[in-house]
Image (cartoon, rainbow, N blue to C red; front, top):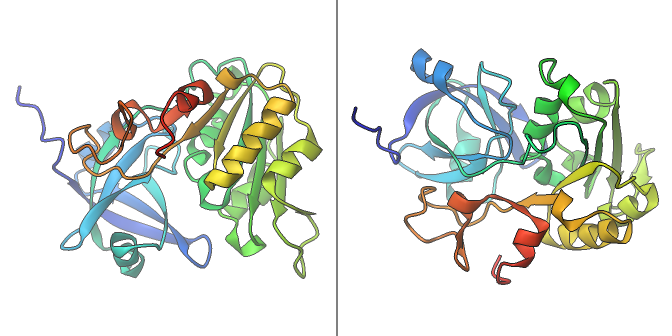
Length: 280
């Protein structure tokens, strides 16, 4: 049987657009071929290529849970040529999708464990599928307590507000802490940076995995705070998503030392990350 061309995008339609912040939109897409939609499988942490015909394509994390089989979601910040073109598209527009690519968060190893999710701004996007995968009815019994610590520069920079401020906190065995960098009118929650808030909250490291995504400086000091609290390095994971071009380990755009982020990542444990040269 002839293998499908891994570089050939499949046509999909944008069926809904959710504005998350002033520069982030979540695009909900459905494959035009129903069989392709039915057969699609991805895992929490994987990425896919999204293309705007006539403009180009770029790599984005899948921000929807694998347990949702009706559509795919991509949460995209307007930052360059392709993302700007995406932000101009209306619902009903056609895009190309290929993937999924890369590895995933170790959700099998996480069974029976607690999870601490730490995100900053749009960095919550690759972590959200893991949270919603664990909270899905069919999976909830397999996982322990879920804690989410999420921060942004302002309230307006926080994504997925319905989940962060209502759905997740109202779910049994789920705790959500939120913070913004500076005080602002109308905000009654915590004020301060994510790493220092981690130190204040003092999450218990026992039997707990940690997944982190956000600005590199946030990750650096959050890891420092976690290790000071006693978290083991091999229980801490993050995701790298930069410079991926072909997504099949051929073009060499995303290599860090001997590793290809698209093929060997994008998810890395802290010991794996520490073994990489400082090129990311």
